[in-house]
Amino acid sequence: MVDARKYLELQKALGGNEVILSAPLGESSRGRDSGRGDLGEIASGPVAPRNDPIPTAPRNDGGSLRGGEAAEAVSPPGSKKGPKHWTDDAPPIPTAHGIQVERKESGLLEAPSPWNSLDEVAAAIASCTKCFLCEGRTKTVPGEGNPSARLMFVGEGPGQTEDETGRPFVGRAGELLTQIIESVELRREQVFIANAVKCRPPQNRKPLPDEIATCRPYLDRQIDLVAPKVLVALGATAAETLLKVKRSLADLRERVHSFHGIPLVVTYHPAALLRNPNWKKPTWDDIRIARQLLDR
Ligand code: URA
Ligand code: URA
Image (cartoon, rainbow, N blue to C red; front, side):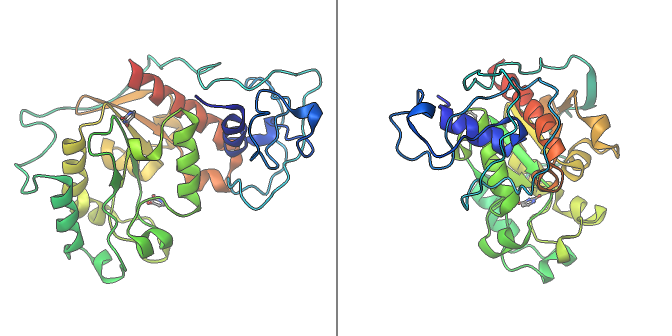
């Protein structure tokens, strides 16, 4: 269950202009959360319906809920609705035709894979020197998560924190991704998280097409082994990698593509959300579409 605190956290992460965090938790703001002593500044307050056309308040937001940031109150007058569930006002699964990446006779792999498990894929990545990116890496970042996840995310490539730790999405963008996952009542450990390339590009530049192509067999085999029910591409690089098209993210969103028969939802990269909070609401919609596909 998403409790009030969780809901408010995610509202803040995903466009908190609509969230009112009231003054320190006092008697008057104690609602259904009154049993919890750990609300901190995340007190329950009125929450606007998500569809209200409320202008976005200026934020210095990084998506992080830490550090005691006080959230600005931008309460629409008269809205006293309590926290809601992610399904409330969720966009329907789009019916518009997406891009189809056809399943081949042999499944999604071009050739039989030499790797029989995710661990074997990770071991191959760890010793990979097939492209220039190996020269600058500290650690390889194969991906992590539930080996039989039903939901799988694909990002672009490791950043600094990922390169240092060998784990995907553990920097600021990763914290936001974790919140996005939790916003639809999943835990990070339940899903699988991978990237188009497994080594950090210098200065966090975009991976080059030949680097993506060289790394591609690892990702394909990971998807093949995990066999998720739903894929989410985080950002244009991931989307282009999987769909083999070059289109704007706006063109790729709002439809469900098919990657070898697996429904694929394209949304913004969490790092993009850190730069542009206006994209948080559309991302929240996309992720709710992916979540509905999981239940279908
Ligand atoms: N439940 C799971 O076990 N895995 C997922 O990826 C999603 C829901
Ligand atoms: N950005 C990505 O695309 N992947 C990561 O693992 C971290 C940041």
